[in-house]
Image (cartoon, rainbow, N blue to C red):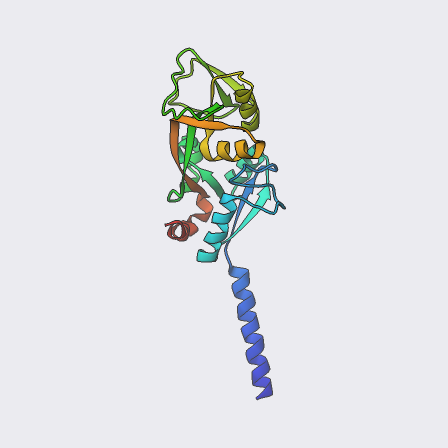
Length: 221
């Protein structure tokens, strides 16, 4: 009986270890400074909205999502080769046909709202006329449906908020959640008028990990 008990225990341990080894893992990345409030720097007490969603997905599906730090160019390179299998908070419309060839996209899980922002007291405006006005935009961000009279590129959302407060431009384009968070963090008063573009955010899954897409979609839904 003792031998049988030992053998049974060893068998149970082996099965448990095998299950742990078989737990699916998807790798994803972020910039070192994060993308507040969606992602905070690794090691911060707060981790951000995307991290919370990833944690909940793991709880529901058993799929472990591991985060690393990668500059954008490095992250794209690794994703192309399936060394990273997942991207968080993206829209299919942001990618070229070539990039779509190795990608599948999940059900949307939140909205990305790029809006016209202005500084100072809330004027309760739904629309600010911007004909002939320079408009601030973050360098590298694309707004294909917005007609700029003059586009002034800035290095970051924080820089834009500072410039709006200093009166160096009448308006700028900010993602609403990011703008609200950063303005609060900076002690600035920023308000929003018209929507420039509204985008559904999804998970981008490399085709090499497409078998996990149904489980990811079920968790999101």
